Amino acid sequence: MGITERIDAITKVSGEYLSSILPAPKSVKIEVSPRCNYLCGFCALRTREHQPKKDMDFRLFCKMTLEMRESGVEEIGVFYLGESFMNVDLLVDCIRWCKGIEFPYVFLTSNASLADPESVKRVMDAGLDSLKWSVNAADPEQFEDIMGVKAKNWYRALENIRSAKKVRDDGNYKCGLYASSIRFDGEQQARMESLLSRMVVPFVDQHYWLPLYSMGSFATQREEELGYRPTAGNQGRLEALRDPLPCWSAFTEGHVTAEGYLSACCFDANANWRMGDLKTQTFMEAWNSPEFIKLRAAHLKKDVSGTVCEQCIAYS
Image: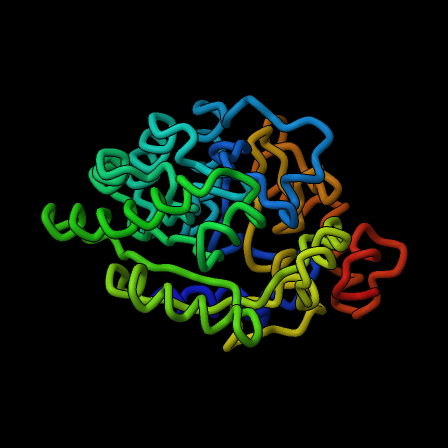
């Protein structure tokens, strides 16, 4: 199954997942590190008053993922909002652990700037099944404007994308290599397509387009400054957009912060959508907590007024 088929399977809310009380999700993303070396002005991470410095506790990670596997979760994303290559040692340990307890699919999204060849080799040695790059700036100037850091990171990221394919092929690893990009308009889109055709697409198995997400409506001022026209909420990839209600993020995929909180939102940088504490609850207790059940019921009624989701751009 290709990456887009996997994404589409998760973002489609149907069958037994059209309920407020649910079986375990097939996929869960876990924030190995909440830190990031980029300063993207529109990212939900930038809304944090204090940027976190503490990464996931490995013992907690093991506890949570064992419960997830026993409950039927099949896919683990070793990332959530932060950049997991900020802590390569922990990332490798988490991947190796997940494969050791027989998760069929362990995946990762990265900005590529810290994914040097040695680090990529280590995560592939550990058993990573999928590594996806996020590429959203057409040139160094735009990179500095949007990502908020020096252009050397743009050059480094592109070189790491090129090197990763060589590492994968030379080592005969089974890890898929992918890339996604935000689809813009007009001249900007033409510039992106030119960059991707030369510097990214030749070094991945598949590239796909995303709409510009609005990160829970927390960054609308910056979006306006950058001239972005975001889509409502997170409706999946561009060629298979989903209805915003019910939002798949609350039904078919779990999201766990580095502090161990289960969130109902894929953009929850400030624990506004906290549904449970996996330090004190089992995964399934949190997944079907009273708070989560109530929120899902509102989504199923397609009326989220009075809930934490009320101010999301998808519904306002």
